[in-house]
Length: 306
Ligand code: PRT
Ligand code: ZN
Image: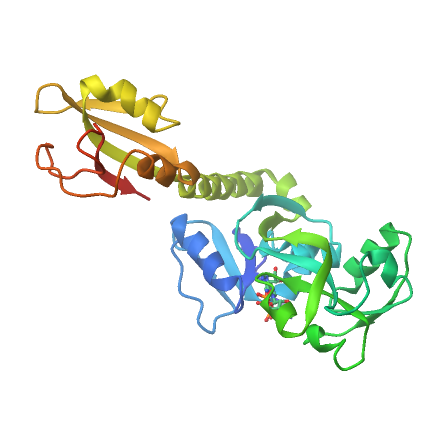
């Protein structure tokens, strides 16, 4: 497919038109406040509030489009970049589309290591990655390239083993396969054409986009905590809530009470809240009649946002 959007002065970003990465990709673009038409049956749409055109394509085409400079940017699984081997620059892992490319074998077979597959036949849609993986071990098994339903290849006698993507692992189990070794861990990544990064104007716009994406990614890792507490309890609260190094403290109308606002990494947030007492129940003595835990705990949780 040839798409000519050159000369309109905007950045071009290729994303998957319809598939596993599409919802998360569109969600990410909207979360950084890009305003564009919903893709529907479109080939591309222009952002109204950022110099960016979005192209909707098959994911398999994205590495080549970015590599050749047909587009400046792409959002695609690392697995496809690795397979295509195109010279693009990975700017940011995006934390969705997480999966692994694995070697899998029939669950009752005797294969225990990749070396056991030295003279086996391996079915895959990832011939380059497979060849490279085994070559790295000094092995050259026969590789059969198939484009779909790779998991059934051992059952129908087409291959002894497969190399395929897995995320939950259900598909392998359903096909009586077990993973033997991981070839590559993958997730969706934002990639750029190297020449686009050399272009001063494009680079500046790409950096604006990256700044927004990184800010949204970072914000997702945190929760904003607001609580009211007696001033005398601040030291206790710091002990209860790790990471509460430099909170914003605002005096309340009620003498001796303050509002404490801070951001806490989500990984430790609930442990902190749960660790400070029994489950939430009303606490009538607090200024806002909402408490998070026991009567003896000074921490009065007002809200956890984000
Ligand atoms: O139409 P188009 O060519 O754009 O899409 P596609 O059908 O080729 O790709 P799509 O939408 O299936 O996947 C797009 C990308 O999602 C892949 O390139 C990966 O980067 C990523 N991804 C994440 C996955 C999976 N998880 C995944 N589980 N891609 C495929 N699978 C397959 C897996 O191989 C298995 O067959 O999903 C099946 C179920 O996996 P389990 O382990 O959850 O059972
Ligand atoms: Zn595809």
